[in-house]
Amino acid sequence: MKRAARLNAILDLLAATGEVSVDELVERFDASPATTRRDLDSLAEQRLLTRTHGGAVAQTVAYELPIRYKSHLRTQEKESIAQAAAALVAPGTVVGLSGGTTTTAIAAALAARDDLAAQGITVVTNAVNIAAQLATRPDIKVVVTGGVIHSRSYELVGPFVEQLLRGVRLDIAFIGVNGLDAEGGATTHDEREAAVNRLMAERASRVVVVTDGSKLGITAFAAVGGVDLFPTVFTDAGADAEEVATLRAAGYEVLLAG
Image (spheres, rainbow, N blue to C red):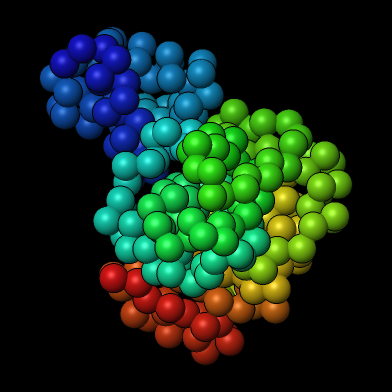
């Protein structure tokens, strides 16, 4: 396996498991321990992982793998959520989309909606990849918040984002998260993204958390909000039934897609 492919494969494995060891990678990729350590050191220098004694972990409390390394994970679940979420959007609607792989899938689903062409929709987003994805659709007005780009997630953060969001109203906002727990609420790995997500939700008449089932019961670093701010959750049909029941008991409306 070539080095570039091996590095990507290491990141894929980290995204799936959260932790790897040198011995595991040696066995999996048939590379020497010295080569494997150099691979991990190289990725650590790029801040794509954190080195540990004997291996590496995927993230620290305020860090996550770049979106490009997560976009192919649980794609079927995210696609089912995206299709169901996009169906909630009527022509003429003002839609808020935070960053994330599931919200990116929602943007693609909206772009494929031929019935929106007559009245169009407006999409307000702080994710530059989503803005670029929708920019070629003349029936979709794209409003980009501005701000400082977060290189790990393509999201714009900071006071410029907040200034624009305070001046708009959204009909519906779809918010991606890194964790959703009945007690801790919605959370992300980055406190700046959490602040933007919270404000976007506050500016919307209806707010929907969109997340695949793997993030239920998980608590990340930065709190975004609880059931009062995020009463509705869209997740996939394969989500753990106990986690879904716990969220519903806490007052969340949990919708299952697929």
